[in-house]
Image 1 (cartoon, rainbow, N blue to C red):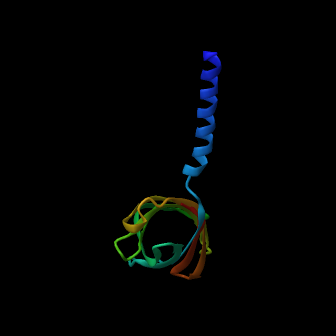
Image 2: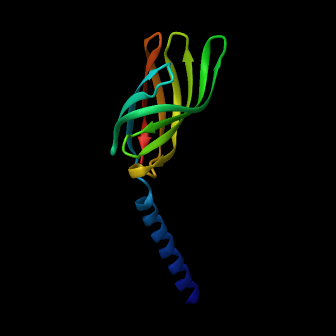
Image 3: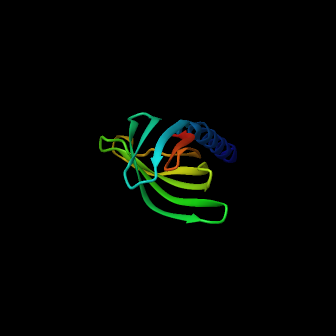
Length: 143
C-alpha cells in the first residue's frame, strides 16, 4: 500500500515537472537587424525589429580580422547602442570574399538597460554597396 502511494506521488511529481517546464521556456521570435557598415572608424547606423531598440549605432569591439588567399575572416564583437542607455553585444564570426559579400553566424552575448536579458542568434549575410561599405543583414531568433 505504501509502495503504491509512493509511486503515485512520484508519477504526479513527474507530470507536474513535464507540464511546468514548457511554460517556463522562453518564447523565441524572429530577429532582424540591418547595419550599413562603412569601413572607417566611425560608428555605423542600424535598424532592427527589437522592441525597445528599433535603431541606433554599432561600434566594432575586440576582434581578429585576417586576410588569407581567397577570403577574409572576422571574429569579434559588435556593440549595438540603442541610444537610450540600452544596448547589446553581438559576437560575430564571418567570412568575406574580395567581391565584398560576407556570410557568418552571430549570437547576443550581453545586453543592458531596458532590453537586459535579451538573447538571440542567427545568420549574417552581407552585400557590398561600394568599395568601402556593406549592408550586413542579421536574421535569426531572439527571446
